[in-house]
Length: 363
Image 1 (tube, rainbow, N blue to C red):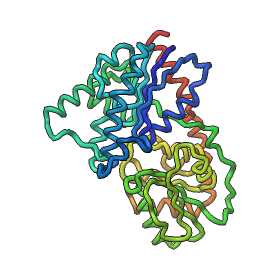
Image 2 (cartoon, rainbow, N blue to C red; image 1 turned 60 degrees about the horizontal axis):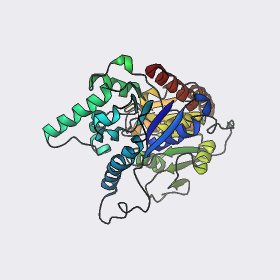
Image 3 (spheres, rainbow, N blue to C red; image 1 turned 60 degrees about the vertical axis):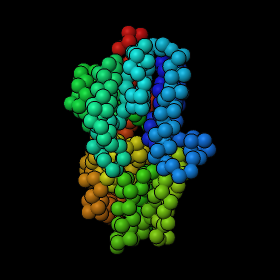
Image 4 (tube, rainbow, N blue to C red; image 1 turned 180 degrees about the horizontal axis):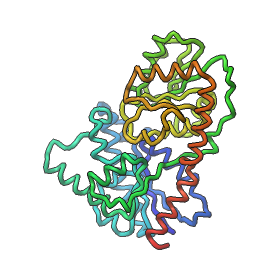
């Protein structure tokens, strides 16, 4: 099958793109055409514009990529199918996509994203008529898809309730990760120092400040806090470390997962959490806020703990409990690894997705 893959490099979607590209093996019988939407080009003319906020530059870059790059990629079709992992294609006219059956995968719908308000900075148009037209365009895009692969049951629910999609054309399919890459050796129960890991580019939205507050107030001993983020933060203590500019599947990032004992992400708002899946695959107990579709990821009390969005008190209780109970950390970590192998192996999920595409297009 000749399939056009429209993929995005926006934050976590870049990980999804790289994992698909690395694991779409020849035995699956797919001839791929990679059509990539870049959200940032280092050193690009647009990115060098002075006085323009980064968020504005990324939106403009995305529209340029869709208008020029995606249309150019689609001119190589029609394909046997399109696999779309970027809702930004909603800027395209329906006829362009309808030249072939297309399939959508996403962690969120536009209405869900808008509901987060300031956390994501995505708002409806100030003009009601414009917003209605945009909603109808998005509704048609989803309803006309051959099949939709939302990452979570939360996103699936919005497709049905907000966009009128037939539930029979929806299959919840997490993006998956490379399970083998994230495998870690057993962690000793008598580790002299417990490493706590946080991975979140948007430091405030992901709740990194809540971990810093805990770190500065706790009486717990013998721990180190490792913060992976885009934000330039000055570590307030010798046992707190900040890492900037680590990319998806970066060897340094993977080493931090391997050396960690607890993963904590007390996010205020998230659609899903690839970092949470990576932590599970690395055999870590995960403390994760239940927001958006993240409730699908952790089995509360078995593979980690779910807390409320930005719940500082819940974070303190769960984190200090895990710090004090190494046997529980090990048990939860082992359960998390088994769960990740069962549900988040990208090779299994890609194979299943390809099978469903074949069934729909009759190839």
